[in-house]
Image (cartoon, rainbow, N blue to C red; front, side):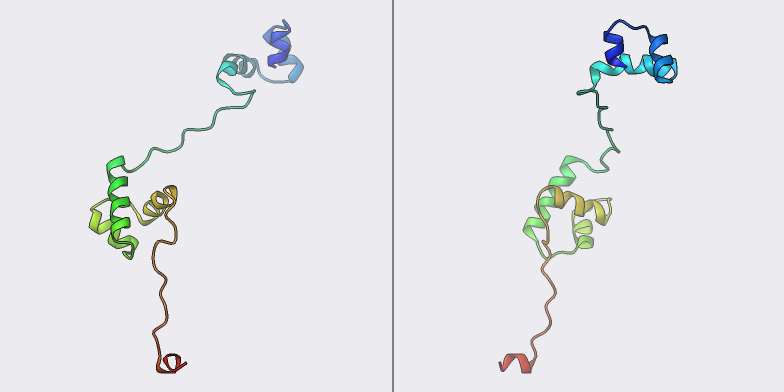
Length: 113
């Protein structure tokens, strides 16, 4: 569409050639300067449900108390978001597998080995 428009064809001719509505051709030509190599810009997505201060608070708490569970982090930091949000924040900052794994108790049989 852009190539034909740059070549001097009018919008009506372009819409008939590609079997697209006239409005589609018009919007494509208008939005062309906003695109990178003809590709549409990515969508913005949903707004964050937490502030930068809350994010820093969670990170500070997790680094100070690495054995706390997600529920303990949420209650100690007094934030209103869910467990998945805490996971997402930690993942963005490269903190993964931060909880210690639960190990089996030492038995007398294993202690004697």
